[in-house]
Length: 192
Image 1 (cartoon, one colour):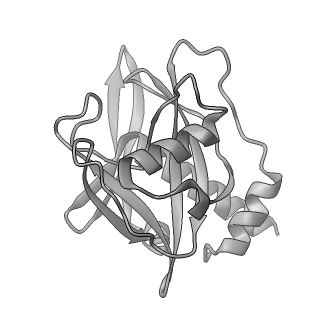
Image 2 (cartoon, one colour):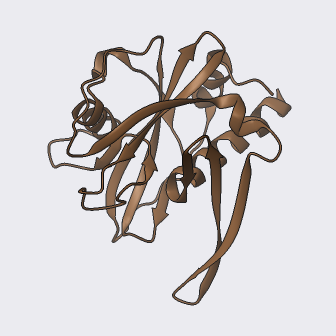
Image 3 (spheres, one colour):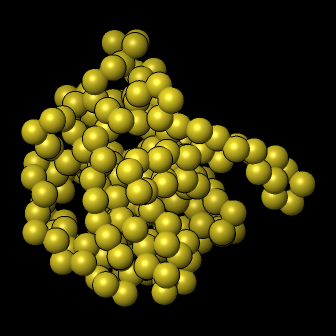
């Protein structure tokens, strides 16, 4: 399967996402930024600094907790992306929202898929973001690109997924969001 803008637009135009309501977890949103690149779509990732409050040093999508002034989860994802790495809201084509993810650190994350036709000039918030990089979407679709480990929390066992790309290890919520979205896209593509 090849993931392109047409597939993404078609998928999100009809996707019925799974939303978490009335959760005691802190609501948050991330932007899953698909970037047009000469060799196909890439995803933009950030590496968090060691000084942030949550998820120190981890690879993530840009995003964060909902503020009272945010109109919705899309506004949260776009605001946080602009604050963290300087991508203006106007340069992102919002494609849609994916399933909410509840994570052990106390957040309920809404992934917002967005498309950028080119990499804008970045303005990195150095206190929060250590690095910004891209990975081809195709890499995540290759057999053997992921591995998993069983973990236990409060007596409940669950798989944790990992993707290694160069010096970067993507795991936890970011890997789970990515894996779920790509599998949903594969299912959708096969049914077309």
